[in-house]
Length: 269
Image (cartoon, rainbow, N blue to C red; front, side, top):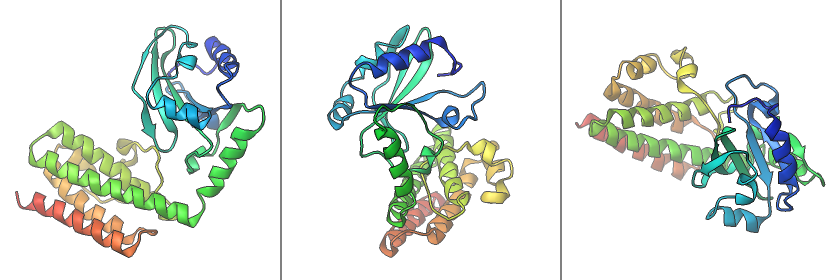
């Protein structure tokens, strides 16, 4: 939601949410949780709930909370956002757009939990979970598992971009290429060469493209030279998979082979 965190409705909503008896804890994340919000920031609200409640929310919106939002009109389908949990975006005539995230005690370990502000945590359970998951994200086995998932996503996005470029679907190709750039920036921007799910705006990060990727990528994308950008990114994807730490040898070999296949399709056009 793009309202001030001081909105009068927010305090009332949080009090009512806590009183439902179906919420175990409430936290605020993102820029508001870290204290770095500006006028364009939205508010990310996190709810700790029982596992049974979480399972039910995959099928049905959380009306026990959305009905408490002033001027609620409707909401999206549920979507899984790995770094935050199960997400519903609610549209309201009073509040605009509001993102609600849900997780149980098996939450997702990620450095993005740093700076989370506990809004209501009566027994300290949510705070303890957050601390435990922050510690878990430093576990080498966990870090390697996430690196593998990010690498698979990179390979998949490049294969998708190959099809889009080949079929002349410019808008779709630019979207795919943007995701590839974000994924590459995720590994190149990491001090320890480990990928994590996170947010990155490619246009902003590519103000100095040669610093993290390669000269010419930004220009190729900006000039709509999609075939050129796709070809350049293919080489960068192979390089990233080759050098990143945490991948099993067999996994790395299979990923590089798939990337070369995709790049080969592009070169054969």
